[in-house]
Image 1: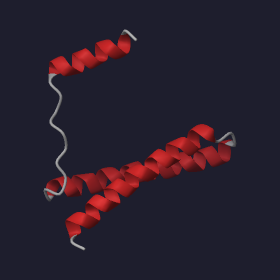
Image 2: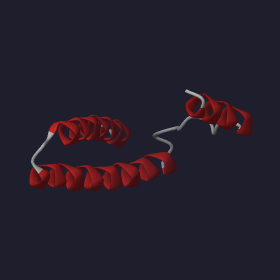
Image 3: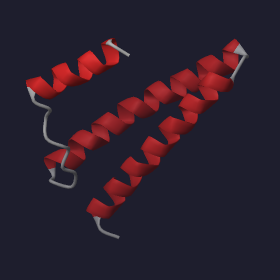
Image 4: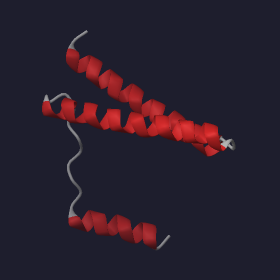
Length: 82
């Protein structure tokens, strides 16, 4: 398997794990266990971002274009007025 495929696979797997951690955090009443999940999530988020920067620098991952100022204002207004 080539590096690009491995990096993209790990990125997708990490994003899936982050969703699972978030679900576990929301459903956990035990504060010690909740804190453990939060620490795992935080570490995974840091790892995902570092891997994302590597993938982007090598051209393996192309993020969406930045939103225009008008789009940002439109979304902000929708969220604020909901």
